[in-house]
Every structure is written in structure tokens, then in C-alpha cells.
Amino acid sequence: MSSSSRGNPSMGDIIRTTVVLGVAILAIFVVGKFFFAEEPENPTSTVDYLLAAEGVEGMAGFDPMVPPALDDGWRATVARFDGNRWRLVVTTPAQDFVSTEQSRASVREILMTSGVELERGKTANLAGETWRIGDDGSGNTAYLREADEFVYLVISSAPKQTVAD
Image 1 (cartoon, rainbow, N blue to C red):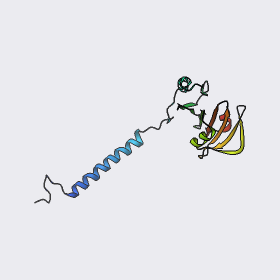
Image 2 (image 1 turned 180 degrees about the vertical axis):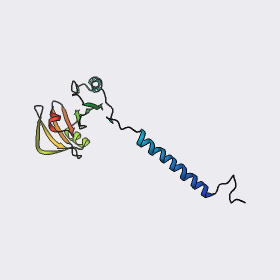
Image 3 (image 1 turned 90 degrees about the horizontal axis):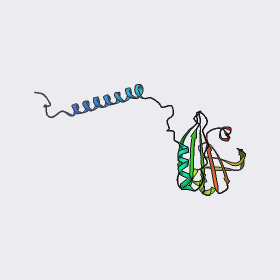
Image 4 (image 1 turned 135 degrees about the vertical axis):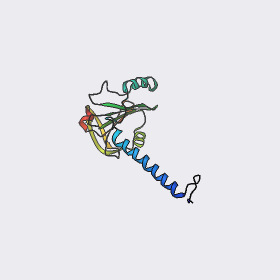
């Protein structure tokens, strides 16, 4: 006579079945990951920043700061207005990023929400304007200036010349 009947499997049978099913699922995952997964060239989506900017003009009551066109290989990945602040993020062909913000908020509020710390007395000339320089805490350079009724903040992993252009 057998130690288990057809209706009641032993604990060993249950454990063996669970292990076999786990190994089979893991094998399917590994095969799929290595043979059928393809890394996209651009892992982020491209957005139509000009279309987004058109919608901002009416809601915000100001013209958002946008370039009329992007150079070849540059892509806009974020174009957002949150009621007080316009933000545009573009990536370069070298996969660096340039994030620009235009806001009516105070400098203090911008610095608090962005995590940027400005370096005392340090400035740079970008596109004929004097910008204060800082750091975002992640090693990216930040440029800030006040003009008219706005605060402009640029955070970038790109070299200064790329940002200036």
C-alpha cells in the first residue's frame, strides 16, 4: 500500500511541485529578458513643447520662455505649467539635460522647491545676461536670475556652453 492516496498528496509532493513551477516561471522570465527585451534608444517620451506653450499663454497670462525650434538631436521631454510655473526639460544628443523654469514665485520659494543652493558672489554670463550660479545637490549646475516680474532657473548636466547656446 502506498503512503499517499490519489486525493491527498504528501507535503513532499506539494513542495516539489512548487519548486518545479517556480523554476519554470523563472526560466521563462530569464529567457524573455535576455532574448526578447530591447532597450529603447530614448527611454523617455518626446513632448510637443510648442503646443503645450500655446495653452499656457491663455491660462498664465504670460508668454512662456520657449525656443522656436530645437537643434537636431535635442528632444523636449517635459513641458508643464502648474499654475505659477512653466517648466521645459530638453535632452541633448549626448543625453545631458537642460531644465528651464519660469516663475512668478519668489527666489526663496524657487530655491526651496528645487533644492538648489546658490554660491555667494558666483555669477556667469549666459546669452548676454548675468546669472547667479549654484548646485542642485546632484552635481548639476544651476543658473538663476530675476528679470521683469519673473524668476528664471536653469538646471543642467550639460556643459555651460551648451546651456548658453
